Each structure stands twice: as C-alpha cells, then as structure tokens.
Length: 307
Image (tube, rainbow, N blue to C red; front, side, top):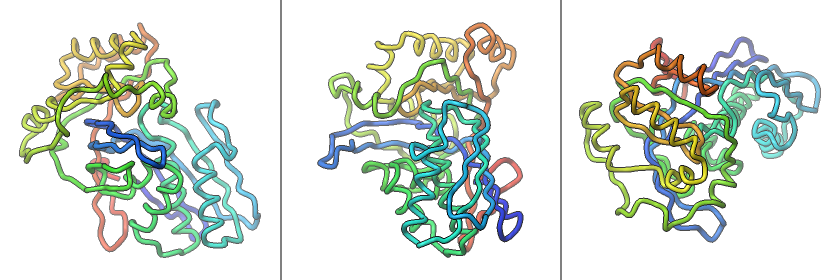
C-alpha cells in the first residue's frame, strides 16, 4: 500500500485491488468456510482512504464514489475500526474519507483492502507498534482476504486465507480488468458453488518460472473453480472472455467469485479496450501487478507503482 503519514494525526493510504491468478475451492470446513488454494496478485487499482484523528469517540466515514456502499457496520472499514477500538481500548476516533475506485462485489477484494488499510492507519495513528503478522491476525477476524494485504503483494494463499506464502513470480506484464454490470456477492457465489462443476485435476502446484511466458504457460494448467458454474448462469461473462481473447490476451480468467474477468497482455490495444467500454457499458481498467518492498517494518513504495 502507498502509505503517507501527513502529520501525527493524519494518514493517507492507497489500498490496492487484488486478482486471483488461479483459484481452487476445496472442501468445506467445520467452521463453515471453504479451504482454498490460490495465487493472489495486487494490482494498480486503488481505493484512497484518508484518516484524521479527532477528539470524538464516534467514527465518521464519508464515502465518495459508489453510493451503494454504506457507512455503517456492514462496511469492512467500520468493522476494522471497531475491532481496533475494542482490542486496544482506544479513546479517540478518526474521521475517515474513502474514495471508492475499486468496484464493489467484483472479485477484487476492495473491501478487504480497505479494512487492512484501516488496521494499518490505526497502527500508525495510535502508535500501537504492531508487526505485519499481528495486523494480519487481526484482519483475519473480519475477512479471509485481509491477511494478504499485509504481505508483499504476491502470495500463495491456502486454508481459508490465513496461510500466506509470499512469492516472486514474474510481473512484467499488463492486465485489462473488465467488470460487467453483474452483482455476485462472495456469499452467493459459494452458495452456487458445486464441486462437480470444478476442474477435475490434482491440486495445482506452481513450478519455478523464470520468464512471463513460462509463468503464463504454468498458469494455463490451472483455473478458477467458480468459472464453470458462473459462466452457465451469467452468459455475459462468456462475452467478456471472448472480447479479451479477440484482443490477444495470453490468459483470460475470472478473479475470485467474479464478475471481474482479466486478460494478461504484453501490450493492451487501447482502441479495442475503448470500444468494449462504450459498446457494452462495461467498466474497464488497465493495470499492472504491484509488489511491496519492506524493510524494518516500514513501507517503501517504488516509483513504478509498487505499494
């Protein structure tokens, strides 16, 4: 994440989206969650959150952008702050401004990223001196995707999301994300999920990949276990996939439980992207993978867009 501590009482954080380069949904656990295997990659599409410490004891959250998002206890930002308030006995609450750029319920974990940013902002504003692993453990109490955002920006994820193994596979490619006008909540997606509609294969294991070409070849042996059922239920997803393939994408895949679908490119043909945006009224985002350079528990973003 891009973290800027403007003053002792003010913090600005750019919270990135993530994509699933592959996703295997495994057995249901006794706690109601499913085990998964996945490779998460942070990308250069950000929500922007500004935190300012006040003398009040009640959180205020102003949201710019998608007005469907509520500033109540259903919002993961509010849940994350309430967790920090209760856990550490905080006495003052911040005023938060959230500029929502990541589409909601789109398979991009924007809400989880915002929650991670809130935990991180509290760590700075209240001088809690928490480590990344401690913040990740707190985040897991709210959502399964949150621990990833305290990693290096690319990681193999297992369990229900709590097992995060940082990786360094090639990132020298571009991505076109297309989000059609469908709403698929994660809860609904798992409700629709059927094990008999997953890819019949052994658990996918990434081998050593030195180049982007090798990496894409390896990813092509995997998949997203939500795709088969979702593509049957939502034909528009097939149209999105076909557009990306016609544009020359090396790999096309749905992210998370959808409905965002991404294509991997060496270069993205802008004219065709613009045509897809206007003709289909889809939201299109040209992004790149981003990684995190960490040293002594401090975020050091690099100019090329790392977070």
